[in-house]
Length: 152
Image 1 (cartoon, one colour):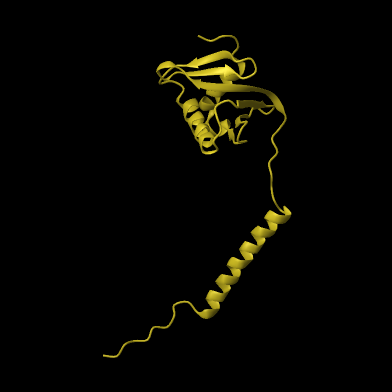
Image 2 (cartoon, rainbow, N blue to C red):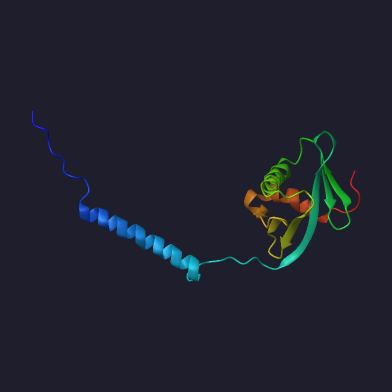
């Protein structure tokens, strides 16, 4: 039996063309990163209001929400409630642990003139656009913006 010789499936010209295309794409991306030419950046609208908040673990799984300015208790999130707030804070707390940052720096809740609401970790700069998670989840944080006084 004679062994059949297999011709390459892709020609040498095809391989060279693919390599050239990859090199061109890398060069184009590098040029945009270095020069900023052609880069698109979205600017946030003006701030309508903002509030710095601190979150602490309370008894039996409650989360205590404090105004960072005067350390006045704003709200107590009962155990098993406010799941979205808890998930967002857990993710941000993880970032802080990785950066060896304590719980002292506040989180900034910001409402912009267009109604958009963001939560920013003032220690890491990580910003979460809460509107991306739907109106009911955004409202969970938005209500913290207006709460005053000592919550129970």
